[in-house]
Amino acid sequence: MRATHQTRIAMPCLLIALSACLLASPGSAQTPSIPPAPQSPRPAFPTRDPHTPGYVSATQLPDGAVPSPTADGNFIIGPTHTPAPETTAPDLTNGSVVEFTMNSADSKYYPGIARDKGTFGTPDPSDPAKLIITTSHPAPYTRKVAVYVPKSYVPGSEAPFIVGADGTDRMLFTALDSLIAEHKLPVMIAISIGNGSGDAQGSERGLEYDTMSGRYAEFIENKVLPRVETEAHVKLTHDPDGRATMGGSSGGSCALIMAWYHPELYHRVLTYSGTYVNQQWPPDAKTPHGAWEFHEHLIPQSKRKPIRLWMEVGDRDLFNPNVMRDNMHDWVEANERMAKVLAARKYHHQFVFAENAAHVDRAVKAQTLPEALEYVWAGYNAPGSK
Image (cartoon, rainbow, N blue to C red):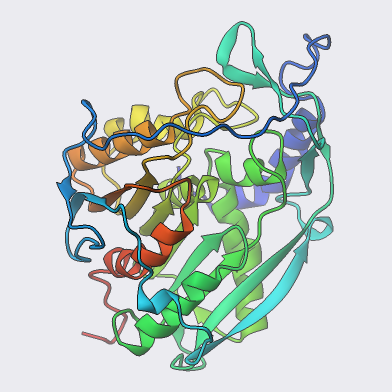
């Protein structure tokens, strides 16, 4: 589903309609007597065995090792996670960071919503895959954007870039600072974009990251990237092979959503503990199970897209972390299913199952990020480099 000039023009009208829908959240009119469920502390999640029947076959690597950046397939790492030297440098010596803010008052794409503090939602009694939320309402936000620019960037030249979710990613900037200088990666710009606050259904972050559509990618393309070029004094490539997305949790599923719905914009994706589960809100009849649809229907039933994907999940990753019991909220199962369908459809992918690791585990990221970046960018040839 690719954006056209006409669909971009129509976005404000669609968002006005969506805002009206958000003001009267799904199910609230017919079920006003159902109180919102209070948020509770996350439970201790079970440890999953990577050799569980039904999980993908994977190569067990020696403790402390990571896969080769040239190898497709499935791998098991851990239980020890020693940070890579490229992720631990105390300072940026080969580049600098430019920061700016964006306000909801200036956004026609995302005017802003929030869910009342301490509330979540109630499963629909007639359908456990749907969540009734009565406490989401319009609310302003401010988001910070941070841009890493390597010293080796040539002013005026078009550069490849990577877009990341959930705000300033110092570890990404640190890794790039070393890897670019070591000529292990092309000279690229890194853009970390803050979310609009909150988490999951009924929140601005959930609306941005969990919605199965091209809207977030269109927001980035039309509103964020032009600001990046102005504020950081860079030019960004329009070649989709020179554009990557990354993120953790819902930011990870969002990274794939961006490339899936706009493969003419992005070809490379990197995700930690991707939320390939049923978390979309408001519901959409085209994708009733949210990002669970990726491995349930979308990837198996669609023509293969030009997407290269690196993905990770931890053995203690999320398992039924909220009140929904729809059998679509196991992060390990979701990522295992993703690895299976990606292989069946012959996508270039590398799947890492990390032992002794929690959700978006920082130690795992510090260990694997340099290799993950090299894998994601494998095969890229910048214009004029051949």
